Amino acid sequence: MRIDSTAEKNYQTALSAIKKTLEVEVKKFPLFVVEKSELPELKPELKGKPYILNYVRGFYNHKEDSIFVVSGYEEDLQTILHETLHSNSCLHSNNSPYWIHEGLTEALTEYILKKENLSYDVNLLISEEVKFWRKMLQSRKIEIVRAYFNPNPEKCYSTLEKATGIFGLKNKDFRKI
Image (cartoon, rainbow, N blue to C red; front, side, top):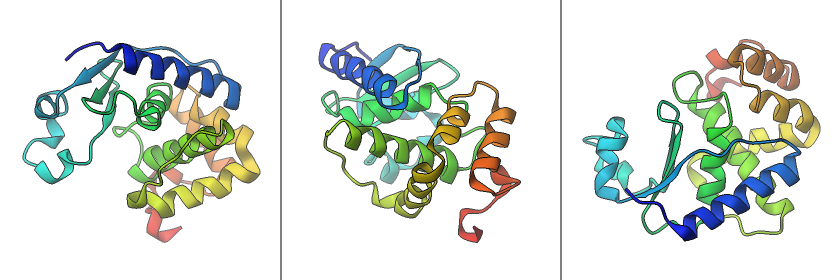
């Protein structure tokens, strides 16, 4: 695990882009570059899943309040921006379905990068979820952004439910929406 000047520069760019595009103040957390071989120790749920390890570029660990970027992705602004968004959201894997915390984070990542005229690579694994959140952002951006960055998960969900019109959101299976 190491601190990297290239990753740090992209982290500053990500923080600025979030503030400028979404008009929100975000916190800065420690950012470390790690080797792929370190991932199973840092993210135990990946142990025994070598096929997933090939796709992980970075992650936010909410227990340690730290962002980790896999070595080789220090220059990948999209990954760093995505993980920076996670680090400032109340939506995490322990309190939110994947389609919400990853889908919405990816939709916000896309929104910011496109507004800043920066390149964006489509995440095909969650393309339908991103499409859903993209549509929601087009019509209810202010409410969704307010919910996303709300430190209180219950308030976050009640605001998201009002914005989407879907009640009981965190218990919904995306395929049934």
